[in-house]
Picture 1 (cartoon, one colour):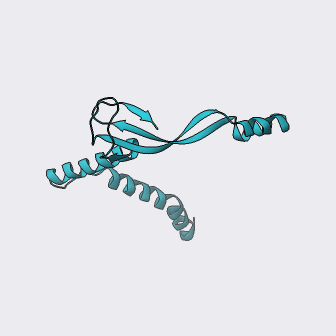
Picture 2: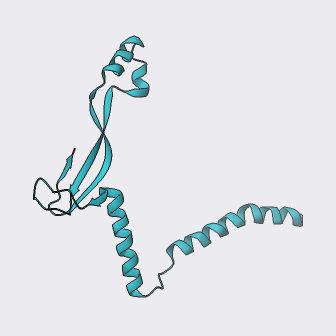
Picture 3: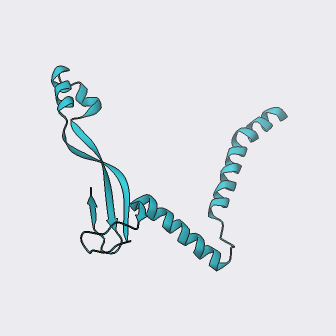
Length: 124
C-alpha cells in the first residue's frame, strides 16, 4: 500500500472515531468542582427544568383549589377544541383529501396553570 493511501484511511476512519472517544470522555468525566458548586449547579438546572416543564412562577395568581398565592406557574399551550367548521367544509369540497394534511380538530391557544402547593392543573 502507498503511504498516501494509509494516511487517507487513518484520516477517514481514525479521526472520527478519535473525536467520538474524546467527546464521550468529556461528556462523562467526573465533576471535580467543590460540592457546594455542584449543589448550586444542580439547583439552577432543577429550576430551569421546572420553568420548561410547568412554566414560570406567577406570584400574583391565587390557586382556585387551595387558595394559596405565589405558588402558581403558568405557560401557554395549544389544546384541541372540537371540530373546525372551515376544515369540515374543506373536507367536503376536496372529498376528504384535505383531512390528510390538516385534520378536523380546531386548536385554541390557552394558558395552563400549575399549583406547586396542591399539584392541581387547570386551563384558562
